[in-house]
Image (tube, rainbow, N blue to C red; front, side, top):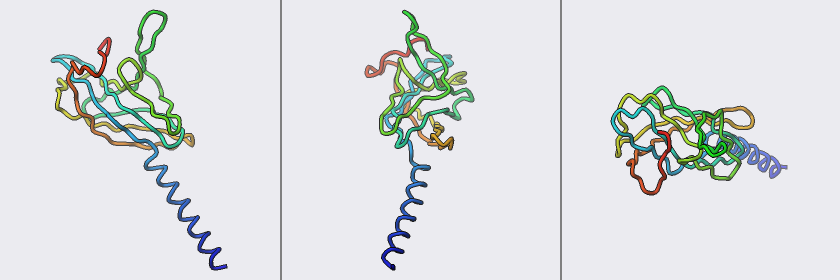
Length: 157
């Protein structure tokens, strides 16, 4: 009986710990960066890789750099590449989702100052689980040069 109680108690602690770990560490963020701007440019993009441990979605972002931060998608409509704001980006469990030039990305709009290579931009990212509970992740993304050869040009910005 004692052994049963110990196993039951251990299982309860494990379940409680697993639940809180999910709530606090469901989404990982890798390789975040922001494209540098030229003087008077009013917008730029942020890019990164997101991976969720459980099915969830990326619903919003904010940054002290500007009050206007939106989640966007670039996609072909006929023969024209168009950009639009999206309400959320689905994050299937265990599968990395790229936010990259020419696809999903974060837009920083109404910039008041130039974003220069070597700067760091703080973000708060908001994710929502299937249960409707929200999780925030704070990151700092380095600013990379406009001519970053590894990344294609961000058309229209």
